[in-house]
Image 1 (cartoon, rainbow, N blue to C red):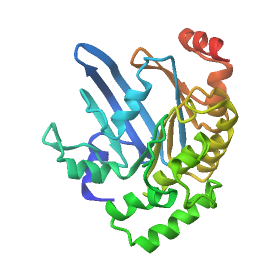
Image 2 (image 1 turned 180 degrees about the horizontal axis):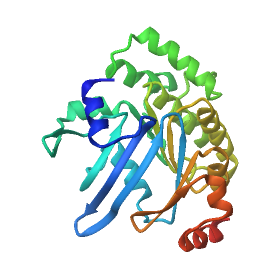
Image 3 (image 1 turned 180 degrees about the vertical axis):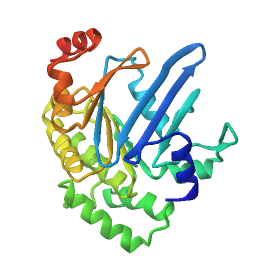
Length: 268
């Protein structure tokens, strides 16, 4: 751990077990405040699932974690580092784009759309960022890619193009591509919502494997049963705030907040 990481952890009283630490996170778009002071801790090696109605700020919060959205207030630390900022005195100063990209490379993010490069084969999609961003030797990157493709059940799709794959297969390639960067954490923004129902299971199976292997994960999802099964922590957000958080099984069976109870009664 670098001196900067140690200092940041000490300054903000970050728990030793924390991989993702958010305090007082705010985000506004013009006069509309989407996040209104969000506090979240995600332990290293754990899976946190975030649920809530549309417009509650779930996806915006996820995008703030890797600086796809700039903070309007508060702090987010990933393994003791700011992603898009450095602390100078008492002020957060935004980093240059190159440094932002370097730090963002440590946080994988999966979206509803798969965002694969359509003109590249599956193998080329997987090795592009490791070779160009992390400067990994091409042969090493290809060997890692083969291992990851086998892990997600697509070892026979090395030379295929995205258009030749089903939606579930494309999302599994996207997961493998994110893992190829050897991230400290993976963020999932409703990764199954764009899939046909019969394809959802194959993606959730890969995510189950990641959760049991100790990958730090934050998953925005509508799959309540999945959240209950793999989650170490469940967070319910509404109107830009964390309404309730706790053990997934306990929260789903016995929510303490009336708003959480109302939401779950509609989706279960």
